[in-house]
Image (cartoon, rainbow, N blue to C red; front, side, top):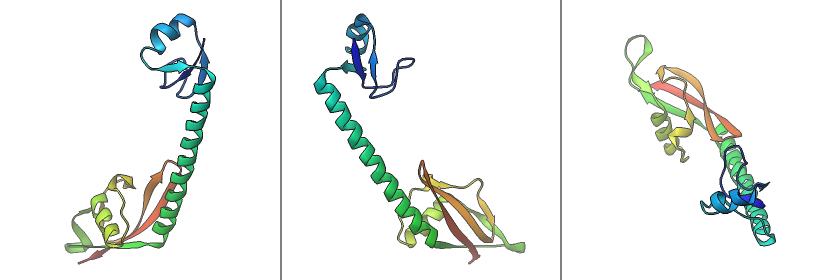
Length: 147
C-alpha cells in the first residue's frame, strides 16, 4: 500500500514522502496515528500543492533575511559603557545590549540571533555575526566606547 507521510517516521521516511508499506502496517499503525494518509490522487495533489507553498515561503523568508543582512552590513552600533582603569569595562557588552542598540537604530532583531562567543569586556571595534536564517549570516560592526 502506498501512503504519504504526514510526519517523520524513523527508518521509514520524512514528511511528504510517498512510501510503500505493508497493508497492515498502514491500516493499523500509520493511518490511525495520523502519521500518514492513503496515497490517492486527491491526497497526492494536495501534498504537491503544500510542498509548493512551503517552498515559496522558504524563498520569501530567505529573501527577507538577505534584505535585513544588507541593512545590518551598513549599520554600525555605538554602545557607551562605563569604564575603569586601563579601559576595562564595568560589566560587559552582551547580546541584550546589542539588541537595545539596534532598536535605537530602528532595527528590531531578537537577541537569540546575535552570536557572541563571549561577552565583550573592553573598549574597541568588534564584528559580531548575526544569524538571520540558516543560510544567511550578517556581520555587524559594534563600537564600544567610554561613557
